[in-house]
Length: 288
Image (cartoon, rainbow, N blue to C red; front, side, top):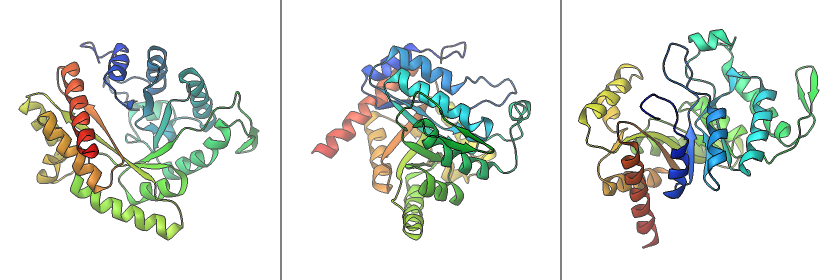
């Protein structure tokens, strides 16, 4: 983001040049004046200035949009980007907010709607005739179905990931808590006779010397998300590149296949470079 809160699309190219695997955009529209942008449009713009970096939704709220509309947008973005999309999805974190009410999105039954969307999306994106309510819908031109990752820390989200997704995306979680959740995910997969989904942790990093920003973030985790203070303190990723590499290694040891971090606080470029350095250090550890 720039100082005005508008996405700086040039950042996407900078991340690609730094060797990042993917860049992500949250679907965070509340309607109370909080700065937010349409994730589909931002990633489409990023696709035009990059060549190889992945484009990830982290995560798209399925109940906010008609399933056919999501499918045709994903088809389009796959064609625009050369099939670089990862489709992270969820049931939405702000039901009942002004924006949700304005677009007529349901507050109840979000899980059922998400399941129905996940069942239909692969066929729609592939250009296959797919039943949606009373209508059979065929969308074209067909596109490869991107990896579908299901967000949410709940048991229901984990089951949804096992049944209908390729991966599971827990967020705001410490390595210790992830280890327990990863074990439960394997149990669910075994119970349902399904492959174990990949695990992509979503988190927040503050890689500048800004104790006030760290304190503010952890306070939100306690006051808004109801975390215990000691649990909240273990969530934000902070410190030197070496310390960040240690944290990434801890997530990997707990079961994570990938980690995506939102860079909070100031000096975005410096933080992005520090995270890239941490990633390189982690790679060297694995290669040793």
